[in-house]
Image 1 (cartoon, rainbow, N blue to C red):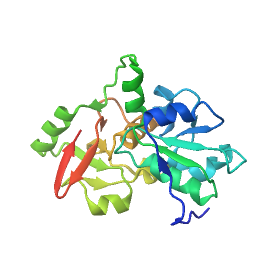
Image 2 (image 1 turned 30 degrees about the vertical axis):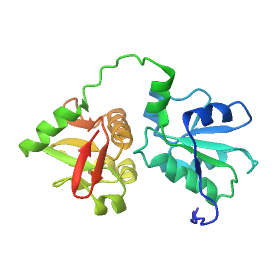
Image 3 (image 1 turned 180 degrees about the vertical axis):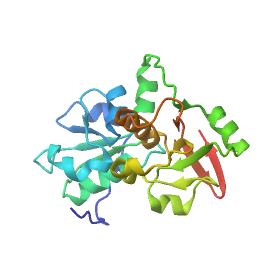
Image 4 (image 1 turned 60 degrees about the horizontal axis):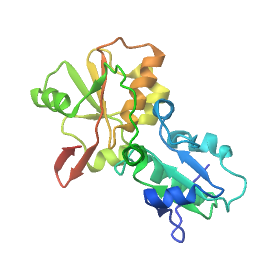
Length: 224
């Protein structure tokens, strides 16, 4: 399926308050993150259509193109929901909305306390920076953003294995180094980590992911 860019219709960004009001009427709320992130936590009533699987799962969308569609992902840095929302516009849906605050804002606004999970492969901002500054040959830092985004900006020394490539070619990942995955928002990298854990081809301590967003301002990277 080819998705054409529409210059006439763009998804409308909405706030938390606007989302609350929209949820009072007939609508379809779509979580564009991967399956593992959705399973950990999602907004009540949301269906899961990972952006990477949009074509295969678009049949889950409402039959009526007039039904309001609301897409969300992790946070304002995540590109998954904007991508999916634009694809929905290309399919002819007329009322497409984008809740850019995502689950992070929702959790904060609702004062939700998530249960603490043991995540041995999750690196904090400080842990990642410490490893990155050491330039340790023991580790290989992998950018799982799309190739286009990687070419625009990426961390120096990081190589690019896009999310979609890893899903279908995970057996080709290097086995001679410890792998650290990162992305723009932390969503894709987390999903890749748990995807590989399910495949059981790496042991604990062999793969990690940065549980934070990596954004760029000019040539400078910022981890938030």
